[in-house]
Length: 406
Image (cartoon, rainbow, N blue to C red; front, side, top):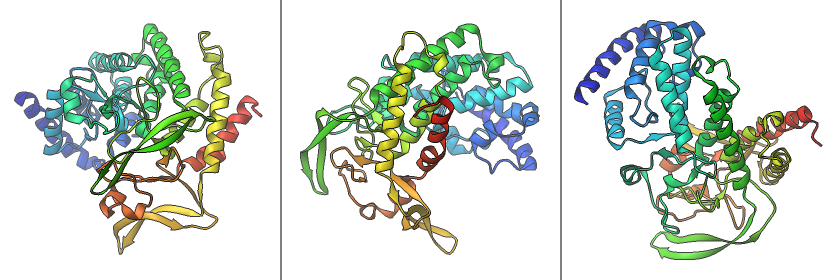
């Protein structure tokens, strides 16, 4: 382990020296992995970064998140060593899928069987990690060490949140996007993909699409107080009946598919933020590709998308924008500001019983105003979403026109 880390640090040092000359160390890892000029992926620095990515692939086949492989610091090496001991990869924050895309680009420029083997190991991990219901947990494998290191049990169900189906931060949508590219043999992945992988990816993809449809919230809920705390009441939601289709929660229980608690401030709710990625994913399904074992899927997708758009249209927060607030050049807060006639936003979480925006800190207590949240928590978390306006005003009308949907 020490020898590997020493090698990585030496390799990183050499890569950094070249990278500083090319001036791309200020870029995000996602940008470097996905959006550099095509010929750059055949360069010496790209292949040096590829060596780091290969060495950093976890034994299970995936990667850790939030590590910029092109400009690793000592803290990133420590984080990687810790994750390697735990042994579980993550699909959140574009992790694993971004590394797959990067290796594909480098392979296309400079074929190396190690890139192909690493890509296929990651593919096998994604396939293995998929629940029978079609969703994915945040981490995999869900070993005891992983649950102890990363999870938080919610006070209502006693379930470790990383076991839930994870729609958060577009994790599910990203995995389905990769599966679609593989089964369609997209140019990005084509040199690395076998016919068997195409067949399996298509099965995984449509299983994941069905999961989205199955998880769409159609319940009626009531509240009960679980317990009083010094900071307020911990409230649970109990499903008491059926209701029209609406949107999705950021996480759903892997067994019941009901909206689920994640971290202490991420409540069972209607989620504005995560719904954007799920809607886009549904609208990207090619009806001609739907397998025979899903005879009603296309009809169900149309019903699902229309219902979600109607719900979002009814719950948009008009004439406000969600922005950083500055003192001079320094951001000191993040909040809603009036923007009459210019902007619509949606809350990250809407309460299941009232559809009011809800917020939280670290104690599972619901708050009903962002002003009740600490400045640090307001600035470090996205409590409102602006990306749904594009989906509703541009993508949805285009989708209906493309497929002749009334």
